[in-house]
Image: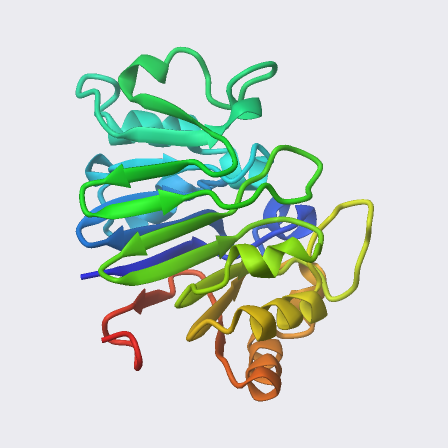
Length: 256
C-alpha cells in the first residue's frame, strides 16, 4: 500500500505562526517504507493525532532549513529512534542543516544515519529510490525530491522561485506535490505563485497534482477553487491538500 498523509498544509509566516493551517509536513508510505518529509512545527503532535507511529519511520527528509519545514526534526529523530536507545533510520538533509548554525543538533546525530543532499544524489531504501534532481532557487540551500516506487514516480517541488529548469527536472512524474505560498510574486521571499504553479503543472503533465503549503494569499483565494481552475485549464487532475488529507495512490484512477 502506498500513499500520503498531510500533517500540515500551511506555509508562510502568518499562516504557520498563527496555525491557520497545521505545519507538520507530509508522511509517505511507499511500498511499506515510511518517510517523513519536512517536519515543521507540530509534526510530532499531528503524527500521533493520525495514529502514525514515528518509531516506524525509515527516513526523515528536509528540503531546507527554514523553520516551517524543519522545526520538529530533532524530536522526530528521537521519536524514530526510541529516544536514541534504538538507533535506526536515515536523516537526509542539505549541508547547511548540519554545518554552521545547524538545525539538526549534534546530540541526536549518533542515533541515525545522516546523509547530506547534493544535486543528483540517489538513495535506495529497500524497494524504493529517492532522487534529488535539482537545487531550487530559495534563500537557503533547498532541494526537490523524486520518489520512485512500484513503477511510479512522485515528485515533491518545494519552496522556490520559478526558473525554467524546474519543469524538466520533474518530467515523467506520475504525481506532483507542489508548494504554492502566494497568489502574486514577491521576489524578496522567492516562492512560487499560483500562476507559476499552473504553468509547471501544464509543462510537467503529471497524472495528478496536489497543491499544498499555502500562504495567507492563497487561503484567502480558496485553495480548492484555485485547484479547480488549474484542473480545468490544464486537463490535469489537481487537488488542494487539507490538514489530514490521506491519498492512496493505488486507489486513484490511473495509478493501478
